[in-house]
Image 1: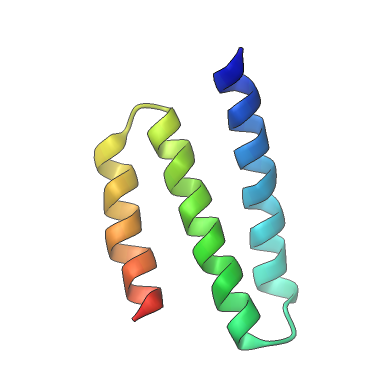
Image 2: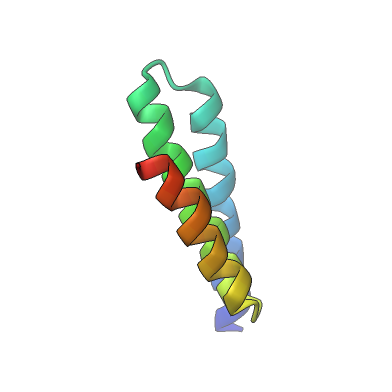
Length: 67
């Protein structure tokens, strides 16, 4: 039950962050929301049991955006 609620909360935050990436007026704000979206997607992958994909998403995409 807890994992189901957590999944829906993370999915909602992911959709909101992705929408804010598109509608952000500042590029810096868009990048920060993109990092949030990638982090939430990684948490969803971790919740579903795909730890390798979650860590790969964080290392490759979030690391590249932050650099």
